[in-house]
Figure 1 (spheres, rainbow, N blue to C red):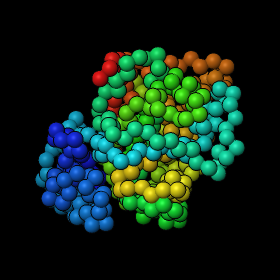
Figure 2: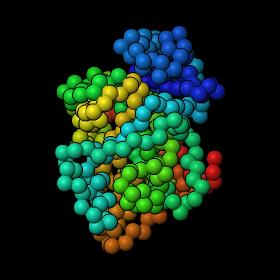
Figure 3: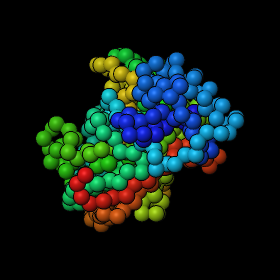
Figure 4: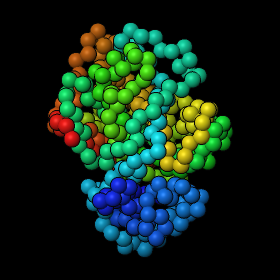
Length: 325
């Protein structure tokens, strides 16, 4: 099942069910008005939404889907937590700047908490006031959680995953060093995050969803050229591991979003999911990073195709614009 949020002028939009062909939708107001409302009692609403989706696919009908009208599946969320589960990315970026990875890199996941009050729609422009801040994209996968109790172990985490999305975790790279030097984490370097048009249930992935990982390639198309298609299944820490980690000391409400971090593979032929990693590889190889960060007019598209070639999440398609909102 694929769900989306139609921008109807209200803060949280209107929940809709999207047909498998990605061209039609059915309004879900008779079941739940918003995605967050459905998540509050997912075990009750999920089968009702699935029934609506089945009717849409079996009988046709529905309304024509205009992707420009879609907001992020959750236009805002109670919490947005991002991990860094692809250790090749961490190793490359740290090596490029002459820093050692933390000694607990392989045993203790890295996570940070980003802003969740305002998300970008999948086709929103990325506005940046100053290009000297080093604008970058980060292609990721994320899960939306059900109510998750403190102390949830990885072995029980599968039942906490309601939906999956793709992410562009926008980063201002040149603001990162000074923030990290303070020892208090990211803040100004992490502006609003964008999400894919569709949030999908794990069963949409078939055998590609196993062990708390999505075993499919995540494609990043920068200025019209494919710059990376790494397999998202190469997570060192699975989503189940990440859930157990964040729930060690507290509980989380339904609708919490948890990201994988920048998708990266050991095989360099698979490319990159952010410019920072490309620059890191240049630095490692030649001692000099030559690829610039994003400029006004640049575009980034992020997508994931199933084994049958079907676009699973819809595309994130964004263009950079210089200037404040």
